[in-house]
Length: 117
Image 1 (tube, rainbow, N blue to C red):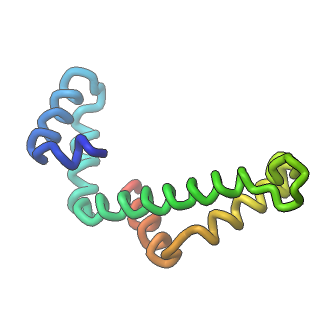
Image 2 (tube, rainbow, N blue to C red; image 1 turned 90 degrees about the vertical axis):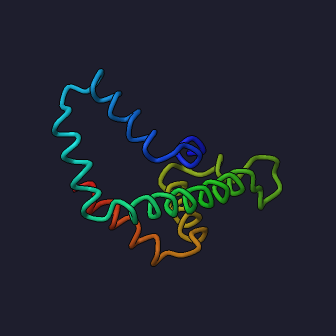
């Protein structure tokens, strides 16, 4: 992430092109897919990916905090005492509560999915 932000955009394109030239078997198809994604909204796509990454970082921090929680003070984390289906429900709830802008996240994931298609 820091490399992409600090590198000039033309250098990033050049490195990607060299990588495709030497290691990519489907060179033309990859370039066509990249150009199509750029035409559909490549500039905004980068902002959406960064937003999703921000939200994922927030969810990860909330999940880690939840992993360390011991509400009944028995010395064992609550998440270690739950059966798998209850643990999944709990983690989904923690993730949904941690997301700060759910409507924006939905739009961002939709934009990423549209670019993928």
